[in-house]
Length: 163
Ligand SMILES: [Fe+2]
Image (tube, rainbow, N blue to C red):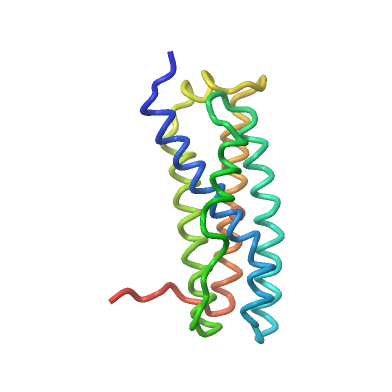
């Protein structure tokens, strides 16, 4: 028997990640309406957007291999959420800080999924033959978000100061 509470919180975290990747993927379009003039910023945002598109696809593949998570439902839900970032009234630096913030959150959630999900639980709901693939793919995504954070930090983008 599948643990309902476990599958629900697991599903919620994957849902958040799916939404984050979709939002980051949409940066390409968001950038068109919020003109970014700094060329280095443009370059990094385009790279992050392209990667996030691949990450969303990878998440879809992972989800397809999991019992009890409905991709159609997830896509539908993401589609109904507010589309993309709202950068209204922000400077270019503040926009970059928002992206860095989002990357830190994504990293945190991927790590949570990787470190706090029971291997037995995944084995139980994994439809493919090798359930260790799940953890390998999540590890890859952790490295990817780490890489994005590194790119932003090399542009001197800093974490938002909350007062
Ligand atoms: Fe990502």
